[in-house]
Image (cartoon, rainbow, N blue to C red; front, side, top):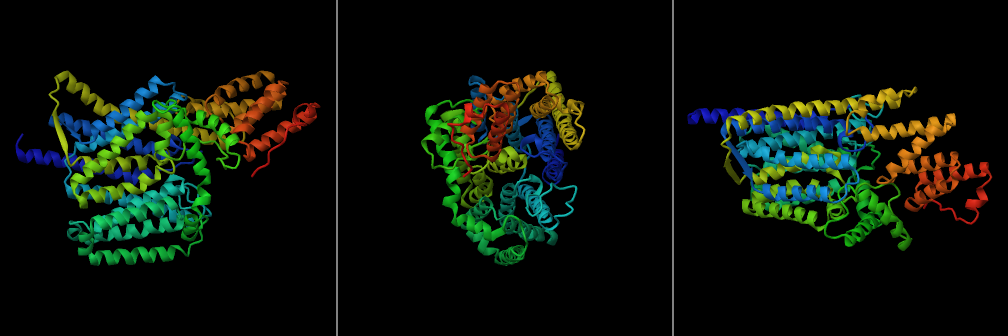
Length: 597
């Protein structure tokens, strides 16, 4: 194959990649269907995001087979160290929730394979800037969605999540939209100071200004501290590290300031349920008071880390061990306001991995962080500073919430920026595959998107069937047969079945159904301290006249959630049943009843 043919082939692969990348950021995150909320694949757009990612993985493998070379970017081995150690830790330690652990691991591995896939495409500076344009436009689209949610509250558009007065976008969570918009805002500022900006068509030059105005509108209307903080730090870093380029782009910067200032002023006039920028500023001033809940979470998590510092408690064990620790923490710190509801994540990614994976997992994360700083430093202050600035909004978000578990778009965006850093230095490994290996690899390249599309489409169908079941007044358990066949949705289906068993058992006074519910409830509470299940189990046991165990269960719930309204309502229900059964004095006369704070 001659040089010209090589370049044409390279260009075709690049165009195919850019096309799929555009679908990934512009089309996939726009998909919506009614859902229960939550995180992961329970949110429809995450399923579509992974479908498009699977096509990119397949395309990258085809590129490797066509060229006979595998490009391995810098940081790859550090990433594999982290993934390998955490996967082994999950196998060595007891995994409390195997299915969530499996999909959490698959999401991590999928992100790293996407990181390697990006390295297979030889993207020069202009091509990489094109990718940033796409991400920026994606952020602008989500900002438009957020403004629609703020402005059009009744009736809500059927193609968007219901969110009257809250600019949540497709993410169904305000802070997620804010951190994504902050990333888009920083990209817009970078693009108007880039060397290629002046050579772009006028309409392309207008895009960063329009996107910046839209993104700042989201940040102002959301009043999100994490979004505002990420934007402020990222923009400051970008200006400091690229000061000469910023100074040379005075005209574009002036327009940028005019567009963003006008947008911010107009947005402050909107009536949002978040309170907007004013409320966001007030949140900063009351940060010490507001952080008391978070401090209690961090302190109790730190106590867990000190108990098992090396290997942690095991992947997927956080919920169980933290709520156990919460009982002890409340006794030792009665003045501390602990989170009243169930916590599946300590709202800090480092603490999360430290509790579950110990020092080994944290070492892997720290090595990746050091690698990022090292390679950014080698790129120079301007280029390296740009990449660090782009990482800041989502990076900060991971230290106060759990963006990667709710939005896979945030995970892929973060990985994309890391790939841009790493692909400046790539190692070439000749594949030299045999005919059999080539055929096998070719089959895998086609199988990845086919299998992924099949699974994630089935997941979307499971979401739809579940919602139809919930909104239908006549609950037919057969409607859950399809979701029950999907491994990801099976646990949710079992929870719905438990509710049906409980209500049917109580309504029909059917001891067999109640005993089945009791068995399922005890199994669930082993690893997931669900308030509703605690309450239901206590009531079911009471109807089965197992009064002692019923009171042990509600006592356990009160120990974990002493001030939670749902738990107090469950306690009141058991009190009512005790009065009817004539056993109230036996259990409650000498027991003080907690009141909500």
